[in-house]
Image 1: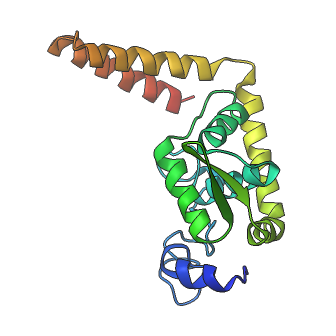
Image 2: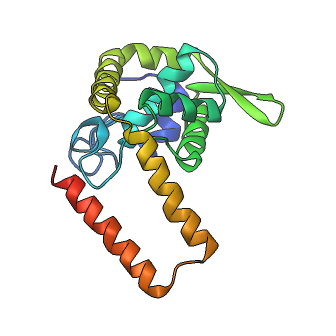
Amino acid sequence: MFNHPNFNDRCRGEWSMSGQNEGGRGGGRHGRGGPFGRHRGGPFGGRGPRMFDPGALRLVVLGLIAEEPRHGYDIIKALEAKFQGAYSPSPGAIYPMLQMLEEADLVVSVANGNKKLYSITEAGQAYLDENAAELAKINGQIEENSTQVSGVALGDEVKALNFAVFSRLRSGSLTAGQAEKAREILKKARRDLEDL
């Protein structure tokens, strides 16, 4: 258990560490106790299309910051590189997480121009040390999943599809019939991928 006096008090409701006297299986709103507790299905989530369980993502982000001080954008790019372009977290997932890590005294930021540069604290390093096995497991799964897609440029195709869809939507050039056809194409592609 992480024993930072401010951490447990500030995060009890949000990231309960103990797993005791909390709702759900294992405690806290995240299911398995701790700020980096996991939903069912492992660190990549068991429900819905989420690439990363939030607990696993927080631990990986903390690990990246431990490697070297980073800006939020650097973290996004580092994660994208780990997945060879097949996954890139949104700024809306990363920046609030960095704020929570800072409020929990696991990282500290310094202004660097109009950006913040995040560095790990002693408390953050202690937490990483305590959870080294979990982080190694998550990184192993990332590597395995990246290796499985590395022979095929899935990331490039996902980006190209995303660009094609949103550029047509933004331009307003789709008729109602074309929009319905596009929706059916996307639904079929999703179902085909799920059936692989």
